[in-house]
Image 1 (cartoon, rainbow, N blue to C red):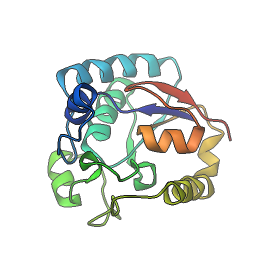
Image 2 (image 1 turned 180 degrees about the vertical axis):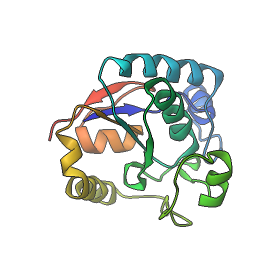
Image 3 (image 1 turned 180 degrees about the horizontal axis):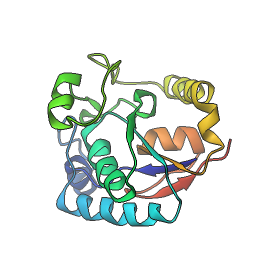
Image 4 (image 1 turned 90 degrees about the horizontal axis):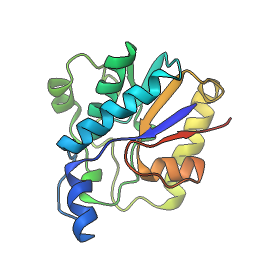
Length: 172
């Protein structure tokens, strides 16, 4: 399975300059982030991807849309691969808001408050990783699935800390 961190968001841009939470819930991609997502999509072309799994945050959905469009594949939303809920950007959007913004993506099964309560513990994110492995172990051995996720989830799942729009290979 291939993991990729979402491209630069408005929150990432401001936080990287100040190291202070700028108070932006469910941040969107910046212009730099859109370019990063386009570059990420081009890199993913070489992997023969058949499906993109994305967290329900706007920044991951925007990154996934760009990738899925280039790859010509569907997007499947999975809240288990969401970010560790710690900062303002980790407060997500209501499923109805997401349906309006991303009308072609299925959000059935996504409940209000799907992002959890901050601060999410290390044990809680480790539990989500275990659930993802348990529920989707068949996908882990596949090289044709790309998961667009977050720094915290990718770190918890693979042990690697990654920059925006970085690809990581996860073994079963």
